[in-house]
Length: 205
Image 1 (cartoon, rainbow, N blue to C red):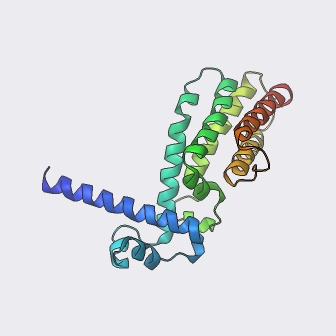
Image 2: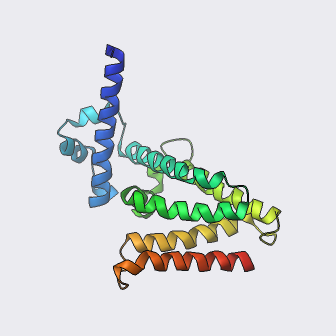
């Protein structure tokens, strides 16, 4: 490995180290209470080192959101290859569950942790990764409308309703709000609720 390649690998490893520490502290202490110095202390480097990679903690949060949304969209790829739009919609819901189960900390940071939206405005658009992911759902819903699966209506409104419902089941599970049920029944109940929701929108949306 040449000098240039080695330096690039070292930079990438440092970025991962910084992001890992930032994610942990954001989730443990809350975004507002975390400083660049806190993150530097966690990885035993000086704040100046972090500033070589990220200009502020807003940019750190934005980078974590990018990682999360890229992983989630990758999770959707199986669904996006399906021919029928309603089948695609159902599979996107299942993939959303799976992404959350496999990446609970990232999911928390992306959708649940309280953080000012201006922290994500350090690029050109506010929450552009979130918007791109939502547009995949809107497109799928519009195709369901176009093919007569759903009655003609506003695809964006319908997509928001669908996302809100699926997100609700997921957040309840991850935040341990389903612990009134026996552990071996929780995912079974979520699956049943999801199937009932899917059948409901198939018949009435």
